Amino acid sequence: MAFEHYIRSGQKLLRCGYTTGTCAALAVQGAVTLLLSGRVLRTLELVTPGGLTVKVTPRSCYLTDGRTAICSVEKDGGDDTDVTDGMEIVAAADRADWAGIVIDGGHGVGRVTKPGLDQPVGAAAINSTPRRMMEEQALAVCRACGYMGGLKIVISVPGGEEAARLTFNPDLGVEGGISILGTSGIVEPMSRQALIDTIELELRQAAEISDRLILTPGNYGLDFLKSQDWDRLGIPVVKCSNFIGDALDIAAGLPFAEVLLAGHIGKLVKLAGGVMNTHSRNADCRREIFCAYAAVCGADVSLCRGLMEAATADACIELLDQASLRRPVMEGILTAVQRSLDHRAAGAYQTGAVLCSNRFGCLGITENAGVILQKWQQRQE
Image (cartoon, rainbow, N blue to C red; front, top):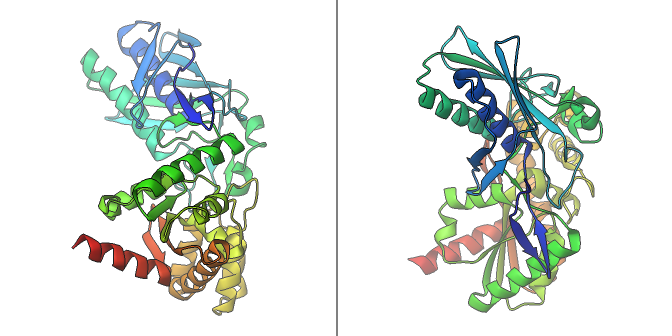
């Protein structure tokens, strides 16, 4: 059954899809239900972390050897199709001798080979939110069936190893298959012009109520704003996705006096290299930027090589911490980010940036951002 949730992008309605993580959690629901009760569910249903309900018909659900329960769900990317669209996400559930629930990856699910990713080296590339969703579904079925024992759950993806070659997993250090991902559980379509049109509409609406603005690429930035209570400053917040340069250009044509950009360092560090469309297909200079600024700060060849081989921005920060170089490197990066923002804004408004990380929290605030935030907080007093 099609997922009938739509978002407006400019003058178009685009159908959303659901993530591989949501598929895996639904498949776990079906497999554990079959294992513990013997029932084959005709419909699988859950509420995603984003608050939307997803209902699907399982592609398959059966017992093998009378012991292992198998259930699979087809990935639906909506109007934002990618290499995983239409793939089968399979959950295999077995009773276990131990207490608790163990979740692992099977064929077609990648393994982490480099530090700095959501999961440790050696673990299956099943991110934290999908793991939590799967565990919640399994526990709910256990409670309903009165089962107090342990479970072993293995997620596999037929064709996942081949599909992963078309993703960035090999560069990130995930080998052997795709990753099971998703923070909200929902996939929002990404039509470039439609998204820019939507950003422009939201910026115009924001300009009607304030001459101050917060831009953030996505959910990581929103979560950070909430953690700092900056979402309570009464200032409109607009998500700009990867289109930071376009958003700054649009804002320049509106009566904004101050624009603060807040987001994950994995995207915003690219601004230090002048990259204003931060999608990895457009440009990915994260490691090069960290390496260049580390070298200026006296990093040796070993550290520079490590930075160039790091899988993520968080992994780069960890290496810099080990060398006691995080502070000077971040100072250089923040200065370059501010310079890029000033160049793009061209005096239309005052701007600054805050760079954060899920793992390390606030990593830095540009000098202008500090001035802007102080001004905003004083107005609140």
